[in-house]
Image (cartoon, rainbow, N blue to C red; front, side, top):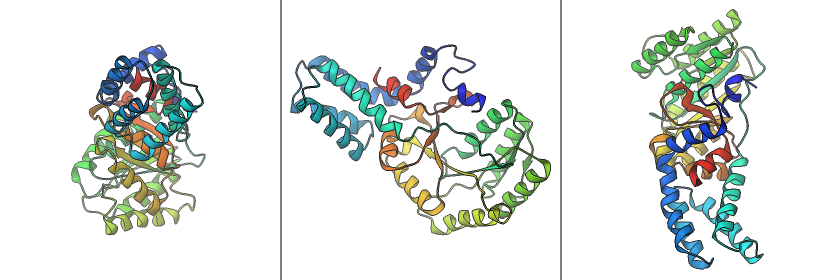
Length: 320
């Protein structure tokens, strides 16, 4: 496993798990408040478990954007535990909730590993404003620090600013950027970059794409074209199609994920902007509804704020 993924547990800036957890709590504060405000009154205000308890808990989960399907699954399991007399008091309920939330997320836990192919082509897709280009730049930094040779492909030719932004990341990390003029054919840019990466023996090619709504059929067809063109060089490419989702859009992120996956065969998710939203509970519904790994989560602007997804730490940060 790459070193920076190992550092997700204890990063170079945090010397203990408690330090990482403290950082998570701080960055997930808005979602944590959505959980804790309702739950705190529940833990402190009631002594016995009854129907009212579970109704209040259900409201808390929905308020945090956990989603109806996930909430019903959690409440259903807790009610079964109560019938089996496994929940004697509020503290037992709290522990059971922690277990159920963690178990729900465990289905999407899969450490990211670079594909064995060289160059490994990682294609970044998602809607406008999700943070694709910034996430791509952060990954470039981490891969470079782990001794991998990296190249960037400025496939978002729709926004001139995206090309310039990627060039800045390239200069900052001292990695080459393949780019053309604004409005150029995205498939052509990524095709050229892939050929260049192969010729230079580059380890990782990170390819940006223009943001598009999942409902824009013509633009989704352009992404399919990118994939078809890449396969002319390597039938197994792209080796990862990473969908970047903005947590602040809440349940709409699930609709985006379903559409992108149906059209492109997404291999993994990156959930960004968790530090600025109270809707971080969407992570649970993504896990419940999709069979896709969540490789990384973004909890801030810094390059160290792109973290490997750790379900236990995520739940602990929300419920502490």
